[in-house]
Length: 86
Image (cartoon, rainbow, N blue to C red; front, side, top):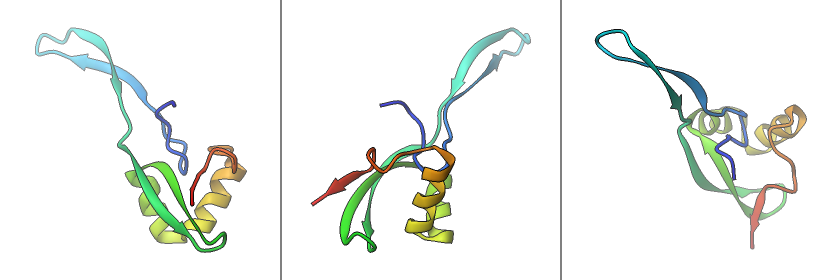
């Protein structure tokens, strides 16, 4: 599974390590991702999402259902890729 947030679509960025002598080497800025379980009231089940900290703040702000609808409309995830637990 690639390291992409299922709510916001954030993924790793590429940049430079800059040393004291200003030499530049490529590096990757990873996303702050973690797996989290949510209770999805509309479907009466638990789901697992791989989200970033910004995705968690968005869920807290607009609600789980609206965040999932926005993510599916923007193409960040699909209803088939959301893991349903029990």
